[in-house]
Length: 284
Image 1 (tube, rainbow, N blue to C red):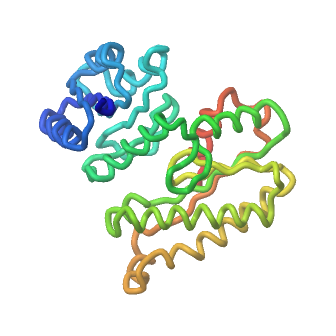
Image 2 (image 1 turned 45 degrees about the horizontal axis):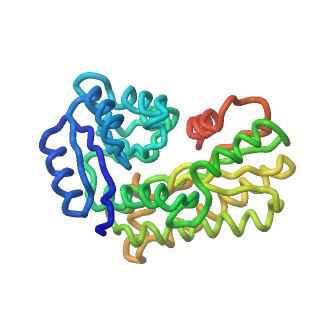
């Protein structure tokens, strides 16, 4: 018996992009449906039960955010992974997507190979019930939300975001293998720093592939923050080939680290997504 194909629904009003993605993912072995309007996308999600939705934000009727809201509000579609596909790059747009519950976010012009890998990883997490990041092995998704919910309800925990900035630019220049190596190295540095400063009850996971979330005891968050910033910032240059380091140090697209911290989140937020959105607003 042939293995059942994963179903992808593409909601994209640019006919050239929709046709290209349809043809590409069919060749990759997926069953693909395409629609060009947001309302049609909602109906197709309910009737075709896709395993994943690739969703453009700019649509001719309702926008992609409204499509995502409706999918998340319907028990038939609320668990479907959503990858936003958009020309928007502003942090506010990404925050809005995060608050709605999007699983990933890729901006145009995009590398179709990168999109393929993101689709594969999202489907793998769903099919295997995996709750860990495929690159770092750290918790993500429901495990992170569960730990944040515990922090809201009890214990006086502090929460920290460590964000690796400009990874898209680095990936475009040096490729997927090099960028995955960076993420693995950074995750190990965060893990090792937490071992030195944190307690056994502290938690490390992902908000996104390039954003690490720490739930830590309020006893010593400043020492942890300072040590993380120092260690990571000193390491950024070494991720570049020697011939590129001097130029990279002067570039606006250089790998950098931003950190945000919320002290004693207990009782101050309603949901895990509220904490994540506030961290992203505050990172510096």
